[in-house]
Amino acid sequence: MNLLSSISMATGTMKSIEAQYALLSNNVSNASTTGYVRETVATVAQVAGGIGVGSRLANTQLAVNQALQSTFYRQNATASSYDTLNSSLSALSAVQGSTSADSGSTTSLSDQLGNLQSSLISLTSTPSQSAAQSAVINNATALTNTIHTLASTYTTQRQAAADNVVSIVSSVNSDLTQIGALSQQIIKFQAKGQDTADLENQRLGVMSDLSSSLSVTFSTTSNGDMIVRTENGVQLPTRPDQIGQDNNTQTLPSSTWPLTTSSATIDSSNYYSAQDPNSVPAGIMLKGQDITSSLTGGELGANVSLRDSVYPQMQAQLDSFSYTMMNRVNSAGLSLFTTSSGGSSTVQSTNLNLPSPQGIVGLSSTLSVNATYAATPSLLVTTTNSDGTTNSNDTSVISKVLSVSFGSDPSDVSGSLLAPTSGLGPNGALSTGYSGSQGLLALSSALTSNQGATIASASSGLTSSTAVLTTLQTKIASTSGVVPNDELAKTVTLQAAYSANAKIISIAQTMFSALINAIQ
Image (tube, rainbow, N blue to C red):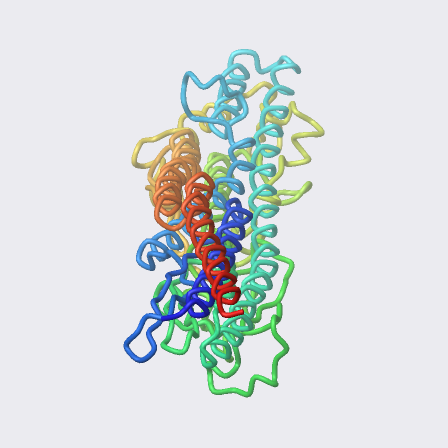
């Protein structure tokens, strides 16, 4: 060991300290960067010929707990899914009203149906009063308007979900292929023994973004590549070479590869089917295979669920109710409700899966008050005898509507008067989820309660999943995140080490100068 070696080792150590200062500075500047993981570096002793010759910095490492990180991605997808569901369903909640007696609501389906029942009761007491006759028509119209509003909300929100699916697939593609592009660089630099921590940090940030769109898992290979899979194990390629294709076939990152789908205008007669490549809306394809069912969680999974199951079931429930109400009232002899603005068109109950008026699909959007009664409300209490003569102010039909159509006795809610509960929707795969052998008021409450439970589930799920996510984020921050005060505290130690090595250089230089002077 000589003075030149001492100076060399001290100088090398000071360069290492300067590099560590730069690392700390990078950590602090990214303290608020989403998905950023704290970078660390170890000092490695160098030995030559069995003699210590100073130290050097090893490659930068990420302070990442992969198991904790994977749990975070799954929970991020769950919270994002509930957030999407809650946001969409809140639009329905705003127009649905409540079945609760103390809710203060006066616009729910049950409220409007109750108003119609009350006006029919009043009409039996004062059949000759035009105001009582008009009240029935007005309440029946208000009821159909409420039904139209609900049906319109289903359609609007379902279309929004369908549009979101197309948009999110594009975003997922961008994230996947950005991961692939970063992995290419990581593989290249790791093969040369170069530092890849910054690239890995960028990749984890993209994974964090991807996990809000879709429930995914990840693993890294020995060469630094990242493999991304759906929750049920389907691999989502990040580069063409991961599926045996030439990387030159795609320019990365890409918003159109590897997943594909197409936009569509949705109505009540449309349904998704993995078995039907021509179904509307279209499936989400990977290498020519429909993997829609594997894309769960996150914004994408939630929007697929809203598009293909949540709103279609709600539509089927409302169509079933609309048909049952019209059928029961008409069966009592009062053609108060029709499927168009005129005439007395009817629905064929044997064709549940056809569009209205041949079937009940979409009936809730076309249901209306019979224009004949709307134009002449007195016909509500006018009956015709077998000889063609008429009876004015006759409440016999109205009384039958009240006792039978609004009844709940087994004979009033069974047979042809039973509400359809299964085999619903354009593909016959939907059901209401509650009994059809109930009175009209009970059916309307069951519909609102069932849909209200779906809305409440999304809201409570968002609250609980967000709480868990916050706990995980706190845990990750304590193990992998950047705490600026901790990073700054490390500078004190580095500063002391830097000063000590500077002192060694200064002393060595003084001794070296003294040696030269002595020789001279």
